Amino acid sequence: MKENIMQLESLTGGYDGKIVLKDVNIDIHKGEIVVIVGKSGCGKSTTLNYMLGLQRPYSGRVLFDGIDIWRDQKTLNAARRRWGVLFQSGALLGNYTVVENVMLPLMEFTDLTKAEMMDVALSKLEVVGMEHAAYENPLEISGGMQKRAGLARAMVLDPEVLFFDEPSAGLDPVTSAELDETIQNVNRSLGTTLIIVTHELASIFAISDRVIMLDPEEFGVIATGSARDLADNSQDPRVRAFFGRKIGE
Amino acid sequence: MNGKIVQNGDKITISGRFSVQDLAEVTAIFEKTIEKNIVLDFNNCISLDACIAVRIWSIVESRRSAGDTVKFQGTNQDIQAIFDRFQAIDDRPVVPVEKHTLLYNFEDIGDKVLATWNTVYGLATFAGKAFIALFTGKVRWSIIAYYMEQSGVMAIPIVITLNWLMGVVLGYQAGYQMSQFGGELFMPALLAYSICWEIGPMMTAVLVAGRSGSAFAAEIGTMKVRQEVDALEVMGFNIYGYLVTPKMVALFVVMPLLITAANFAGMAGGLTAGGIFLKMPAVVYIEAVGKALIPFDLYWGIVKGFFYSTIISVTGSYMGTRVRGGPASVGKATTSAVVVSIFLVILVDALLSLLFIHIRPGLSI
Ligand SMILES: Nc1ncnc2c1ncn2[C@@H]1O[C@H](COP(=O)(O)OP(=O)(O)OP(=O)(O)O)[C@@H](O)[C@H]1O
Ligand SMILES: [Mg+2]
Image 1: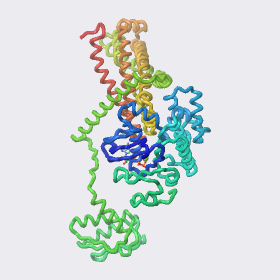
Image 2: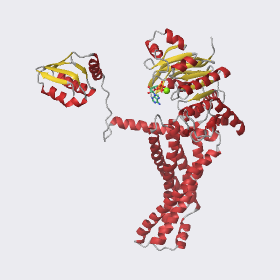
Image 3: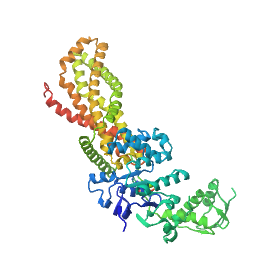
């Protein structure tokens, strides 16, 4: 039995009383790459929000390393130091430069000197191929560059779990493949657990250990398993429809 | 058009290909048909424009509800699918459309009360958390300095200009009225009181709410839309400590200074009005003001400044954090930030006035 790092336990939640997820159970194992897929509006981003403690569930629990993240604010904060997140938009702060954005978590949580922080941040930017844009304003660089800078910021504290909301949306296939490779390297070298929301079949097959599929009519998980297995053996028409597309569509 | 519509007794034959330009002709044919039992023959019809189809459908529906029978004949798969879809839409339960009437009905009043209560409750909770962060969190001097410059230093010209103008206007109005019965010598005292007790602090609060309260809401709201707030939160930042308390501290410091500047500017306005309109020498004016005011009157503006600044910074930030969804809601947030903070400032002003009457030395009722 693999060790669980993140679990949703019969979680029910939504917005303003409207149910999006109903009685959902998800286990994420230590060190694996999990991809969450499903139709637009099925609740993938919402699931991430619950894992990140940005929304409080109506009922059910969110466990990180076996502990309920909502036990108290301290627990939640402690958990968050061990996570990194890349948001759909990159979410870089507009009033700092790219490298300052990457330094933000260091400034907040370490007592490194300014020069040391700069070195760490620049080295992370180099990992994602962004060192040339370190001193730019994040609002004045392209969407793909914002994403990569966001990734550098997410990785700067070497988190145990990395969350990605559609990392490759809006990226060209080459950049997207490079990003996949970067992500895999992080997983391999540091054993980081990765939880990724994506629609890209190519990257799902390339990087995922396990796929979790959500469906809006069921308010939750309809299938879970390796991408190959689901694609080849699933009888569920909704799963077949998803994998039935040609790669790259 | 290369579609054809022909009526022959109870049979309407539709053939060829129709498009939206043929709408009038199709409608006319149906109106001409007075038979009670109609057959629509689509055998030679290849495709229908959605607008033509919906017109036919609505005529058929109204005929049927009037007791006529209408039969479709020879519809191909595509055309049948169009009509099936209309049928499905008609079968769906009707969602009541929200009516916008000038007068609220009771339900609306209930909703408004509930929404207001939610705002009050949310604001109070938010303020509580902000104060906890203020007293327990890090002090971020560089951010505070930034907001002191934005909300304080840069507001000085407009605050001084407007309050000086208010002083001129009030001085002239009061002086004119009082001169009717020879009381223009009381103008300086009246003016100094109204400026220091009410006009100076209030005008400054309104200006700061408009300049900075709205800016705070817009700033946080935009960050919210761009998921920057979420990002800060999951990076483990206390968003109250990071986004709200620097604004609170900055306004708390600059607001009393702005009000003090406003008070002097207003009284200078009175001096100007007195000199120009009442031919009152400056010495006389200044001496009269000096006799009327006690230091307490100036401190009072500072006290008000502490209250008003907190209202404006907390309300502005709160409205920013309430932004959900897209950029349009940022506009709404800035509007509510200004409206709600001015409302609260006036409310608190009323309460403070009650207190004031009891604690100011030399004033009794
Ligand atoms: N802030 C919100 N307020 C109200 N409803 C919301 C909000 N965010 C999402 N929803 C609703 O919750 C449901 C799930 O949304 P979510 O953003 O999780 O979908 P998603 O799977 O991430 O979709 P996409 O692939 O388009 O990003 C949708 O029906 C959506 O309308
Ligand atoms: Mg999403």
